[in-house]
Each structure stands twice: as structure tokens, then as C-alpha cells.
Image (cartoon, rainbow, N blue to C red):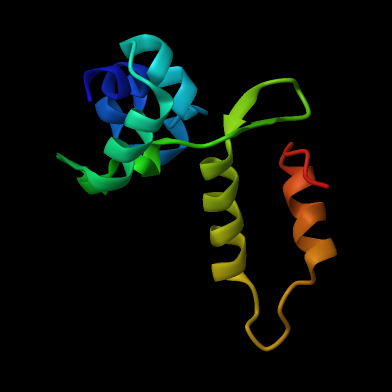
Length: 112
């Protein structure tokens, strides 16, 4: 748990989900000396209580996505922004997949 908290320290200090860094099981296995399968079992079965709410450990793991300026961001950040776009759309005329892709690309996210 300490390895995850250290890796994701910006989130644990701010509570801002956009601060969650890309992190895969191997990152924590390397830091702790544990096998990836052990990290996976723990991440899938444990929760952490923070001042920002209770979350499953596996929620802190995500792949990286490179922005148009070369910065690596968590796919969780992109999903959060996509959720915000969809929540704000006109439900009678939902945005197409192509339009959603375009909007994300305009924000600097390289989405195919």
C-alpha cells in the first residue's frame, strides 16, 4: 500500500483524480519486490479509505496515454473528461463517436 501511496502521492495529497499517474502492476511489483500476480490479487481484493472517500486499490492502476505535447497521462483522466463531455451533451441529440474523438483531440488527447 505504501508503494501505491508513494507512486500516487499527488492524488493522495489533493484528491484530484486528474493527478492519478499512469501506473501498472509491474511498477508496484518492481518497487516492492513482489510478484505481479501477488500485486494483482491484493489490488483486486483490497480497499483504501482516504479523506476523499473509499476506493478499490485497483482503481489506481491504469495505462498511459500520450498527449499531443508528449506528456503521459492516465487513461483514467481521459475517461473522466469523456464522462464530463457526455454528461453535458444534449441527450436528445447525443454526440457521435467521431465528435467525441474530435473533442478529446482538441483537448490534446491522442485518441484514435
